[in-house]
Length: 477
Image (cartoon, rainbow, N blue to C red):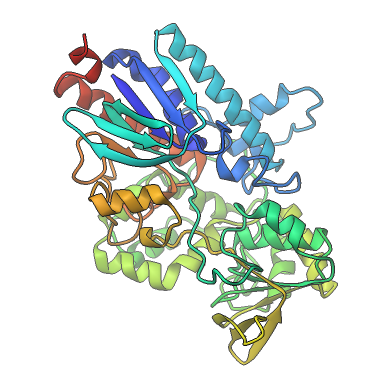
């Protein structure tokens, strides 16, 4: 059996590790991984060209790893590196170190696969199309076509189309455009950033470090991420089962009644001014925040909870609560919070609510309309990420797959897949994993969840291919 994996970031690494664990049971002969950049392993979040040394992980090292059963894989690898100073559970290290770890994990998977006579090929080519054949699928690149029994779309974070193609100083994809941002944003410039979550914090800190005069961060709510408290070693007692009532109110009631949490500062859920909120959060982050630990534990069942929610509940969450969830469930590291506090105090960063629109005047100046005021900025960055609309991606591959009907959009965004098997709706041998499956699933970027998704996908792929028609390789014999 021949398998193609389109994309070579974290999801692809996890798939290769899982294929190394299961692949010999289903006569896998060859795995081909395609990657446009030619860098196999890091992907966009952890790559050299798409990060800076100052970008740190938003999770403590002790909570990250590529194994479903073992949470300390990344920390163990870090400690084995020459000159490593990371020994604490609460350390937050450079994203590039995660990229290096993923490269090593891919090489380990390659060696394991080789022991089972499974070849892992890595091709620095851009996949532009996938066509269904009988049997199998044809993968098309500029270099030609190749047939496979199964294809997995693990394309990661694709670029969005820019809504302002004529504005040279508008950046719709800040991580993709990082090198351009670093060279084009001039010292003393005013920069606007749409979005107030973790990506916006990254960009504000980086641009301020490069000498930007002022960075304005804005969104509808103006709510920045909270700050992560101290991490416990093996927290116990957290709820790992679904709430009895599958609804938004059922989730909130379950969380409210599961236990008594330690006291927090007054105004935790109130719309405080940004600096006051940040300062209270910094003080609170000096301690273990038990509600964060319990909220983190929902990752073990949140995908199943999401799939059980009805359409009305899902739409209500996306419309009213997703931003709030992101602020509380995905807090920033204390180091970043302290840097952001200093910049706000110095008047170099401001945070605004009431975002309305981005536009350009007759002279090409970029204007940001907020409730009650309009900002004029030299550069504008969209830090809101992928909103779920496949048609707005800047990807010939996705466009071709949509046109051909090989994929379709889930009503809540992303590629429509079976949330248990990751098989694309209507296909017999094409799967999807990662950010473009958000909508069918809830958590699609966190490494610990991707490891589970990779296992589910490969388990189905192996089982499915044991009972379907002969593979391409067997027909060619």
